[in-house]
Image (cartoon, rainbow, N blue to C red; front, side, top):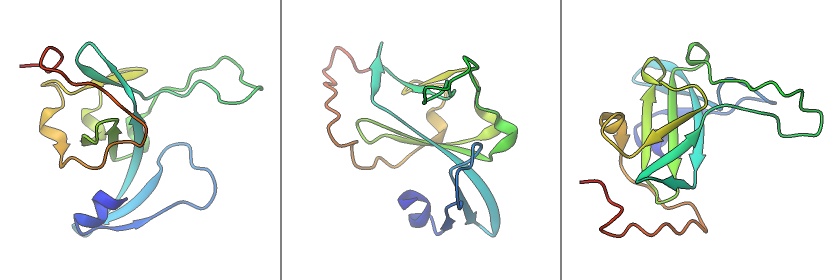
Length: 130
């Protein structure tokens, strides 16, 4: 929400639970639905972001729900070190997870924000992609 507000957007949250998007915004005179994901998982020099839902309570029926890009307009991702992406839904690929930090989604990376509290990822010279 903070990043969108800094872009000049008016931001609104849904009342109750919404399965397909996390917030709405008016940006450049147009209403958009935004799905938000966070990740602390850093493996093989990339951030792994889970975009599927597989329950969360004891009544889980073993059905995995994949992210449906027709149900939102943008995917906003914040990862452990504060890097952020604002990806148009039609450009989101992958069934259950995305890998960010390489060239595939580089054009959608926006200004870095604050790191996720408690996330300590060591990015030594040997783990940073050239």
